[in-house]
Image 1 (cartoon, rainbow, N blue to C red):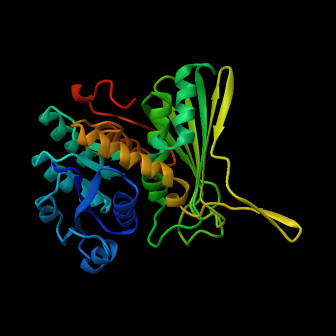
Image 2 (cartoon, helix red, strand yellow):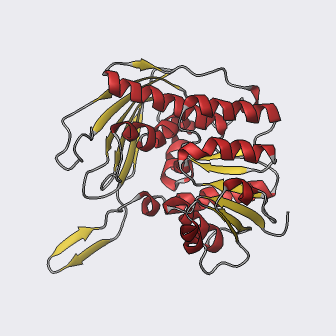
Image 3 (tube, helix red, strand yellow):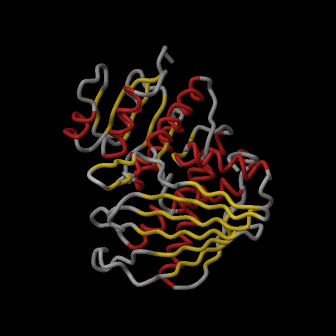
Length: 341
């Protein structure tokens, strides 16, 4: 490894391009060494102005490019399993955007492959663990000043859903973040899920069940509810309130610029996740780079990615059947004992 950690970025779309910018302009101790994307023109656009970056249309060739010490996976979810296993085979540390692998069977294969190595190589991109407000809430809950957590009330709203967004994706794409945040904040696994379907908004595309109300049960009796509304029309909002035996704590209220002019005031509302969680992404990638340069892996791991996939699959079944669906996890390998939660 040279003075700077050489990172191969897989995927140059919305998320990948933002990570390329972040590594080049924000993060210390790393550089973009290679970029892979099937769309060569998109990859060229993402690295415009950067020197010494090799471009590839296949992930494998990027991982084998000179100067690559680590991998950041920001490609579509179905491509993640192959990329992770290929990186493992080369002993390359990985930061993988969520979902680690969309289906639980593939996610379990990744867990088992890493466990066979006997050491962690993967960090999964659940960036809310790096958000300042979420970290304050986690510290408060862990400190016990409010007593035992009883409930989490969560809100997840988007301005609009992208083309081809499905009803299942409200659970396995949007609520996936709440799944990990709830496991992390409470230090508990989620054991069952129910999805309620209110009347769909007139602003939702035809056939999309939006909003949804998702209810999770945990192994020690807490409840987690999530209102997910991906076509609210007015802004991107993520909120969480922990209700405990001796008090409550709420995060996610808009602490943004208030503009007063011509006899009225208006408050800015973030329009997407890259704005709301910009600092969290910066901290996440910086923490990954720092740990990787020291030969360590920290943060949410492959087990967390697997657990999120299992819970999300149960949530989709609950949406489709209208019933309560139990969450069944495989035995947790010793490699992940005491990690993340």
